[in-house]
Image 1 (cartoon, each protein chain N blue to C red):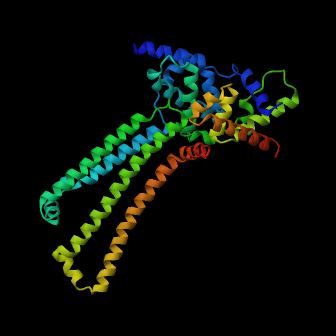
Image 2 (image 1 turned 30 degrees about the vertical axis):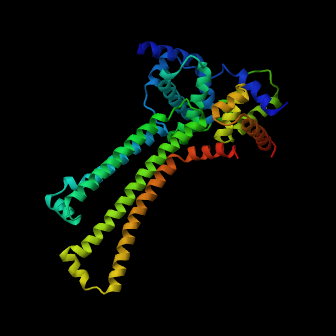
Image 3 (image 1 turned 90 degrees about the horizontal axis):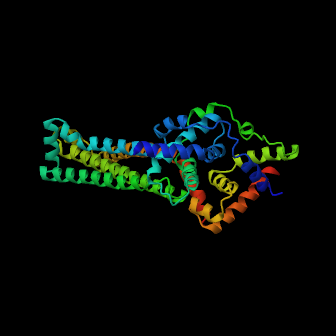
Length: 212
Length: 164
C-alpha cells in the first residue's frame, strides 16, 4: 500500500483519540489570553520605532534655548528649521498611516501565501521608515559636523592649524565614524527582524519556489 | 450579544477541537509546545470569528486559521526547547487492527512526516484530512497544478526518508 494511504487510514481512525479533550470551561479562558504571534511582536517593534524616532526628532524642542538658537543659526533662519520639522513630522504621520493600513490588511483567514505577503509588506514599510531615519541621521550628523568645523569659532580655530591634507583626512575619518554608527544601527535592525521573520521568509520562499 | 458570540464560538471550537489538536501534533514536538500552539490558534480563531460568515464551513475555516497560525504567525515558545520530545508517544497507535510491521511502519511514517518542512507538512495534513487539490491550493495560495506536483514530490521525499 502507498505509505501515505496507510498513514491516512490511521490518521482518520485516530480522529477521536486526542488524549485530552478540552472542555468549554477550559476553552473560555484560552480565548482571552494575549497573543504572542509575530504580527503582535512586529506591531510592538514598529510602535517602538515610531516613538524612538519621534523622540529623536523632538530633541531640539525639549533641549535648551541656546541649543535651539544655535540650531536656528545653523540653518541660516528658523524658517528652514521649521520647514524641516514640519517635513519630518509629515513623514512620520505618513508612515503611521501606511503602517495602520498594512496591519489592517493582515488577515489570518487569507490563504497562506497572501498572509505571508501582507506581513512581508508591513515589514517593508518599517524597513523604509528605518532607512529614511538612518539616512536623515547620517545627513544631519554630517551637516552638523561640517557646520561645527567651519562655522563654530572655537572649533574652526583649532582646525585652522591643520594642513589641507590633514583636514581632508580628519573629515574622512569623522564621516566614516558617522557612517559606522549608522551601519551598526542598521545591522541591529537586520538582526531583530531577521530573527523574528526567519521562519516566515523560509516558508515564503518555499511557496514561491513552487511557482517557478 | 458578545456573550452569545462567545458561547457559539466555544461550542463550535469544542466540537471541532480535533482539527486544532492535529495541526499542533504535526507542528510541535512536545506537550508544552502543543499546548502553546493550541492556545495561539484559539486566540487567532476567536479574533477572526466575528468576521466568520456562515457561507464557509466552520471546520474548513478552522483549517485555514490553524495552518496559518502554525506556519506563519506562531513564534516557538522558549520553554518548549527544554522539555522532552514525544514523537513516539504523541501518535499512540491504539487500534489493534494493525499487525506489528504495520505499526512499526506507521511510527516511522509519523517520524518521517515530522522531518518535512512547514509547507510540506501543511500539504500532508490537508491530504490526510481528505481535502481535494482545489481546497489545498486555496488554503495555501498556490495553483492546483503546483499543489499536485508538490504533493508528488513530498511522497517521494517520504519514501527516501523511509528507505534511505
